[in-house]
Length: 261
Image 1 (cartoon, rainbow, N blue to C red):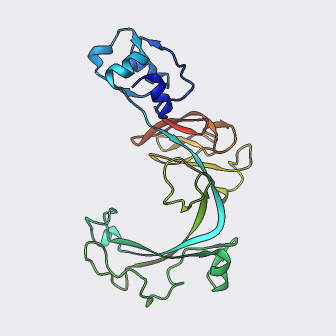
Image 2 (tube, rainbow, N blue to C red):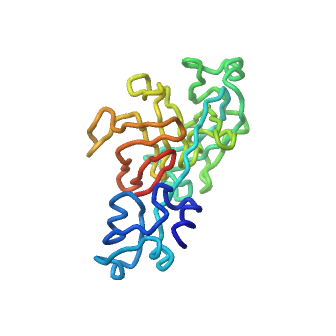
Image 3 (cartoon, rainbow, N blue to C red):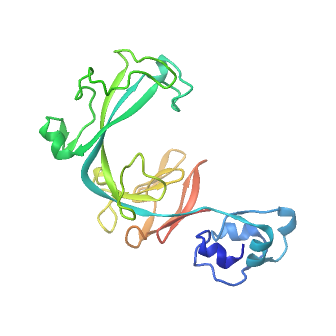
């Protein structure tokens, strides 16, 4: 592919000029944060690099680029029923958790409707419980995917998860189900780390959740109380420096795009 096609397909940030870019090697471009590539090192190491020509000639694989979108709060929830047995009490090879676990969606309803049923609330939000739905209700999962039948003394959870509306598609999703690129206001985190727009911005990256307005950590210790600065209006936000989730993700947030290093 050529440079123009790569830009059209969203593989490279449009900030890269539509002309040959000169560098000693592909690694220089990657270190500069312009692109993440994998090529035959023997062909390009210590030689002049014409990016557009090499992209067409080598079929360069570039780092992923994900468009961010805003998740707006709603007054609706997704109620699910979970059964599980702790890992200290048995192992499971099929649940994906290492222990027996099943979560079944029960219904979608509203905060107000749950409150009218007498559901426990805290600050106007329904709380997670173990007995708000009778254990005799047939909608409770009875067995794990591996065939293990849950016992009465295994764990019971009623989980009312808030639904958010995607700003790009209008779809309702829970934070757990939101894909990479999702942005939301974690207002339950308090006022200490709110940003300039008075929200606590969080972003779902391919490597997990990133609290943009929160502290940064190194070796498990707080490095900076406010780890990043940000500009722009959600979802078109730019944050500095990069986000690094060790072993999972390293990238930039630029103009509302997550760009892999």
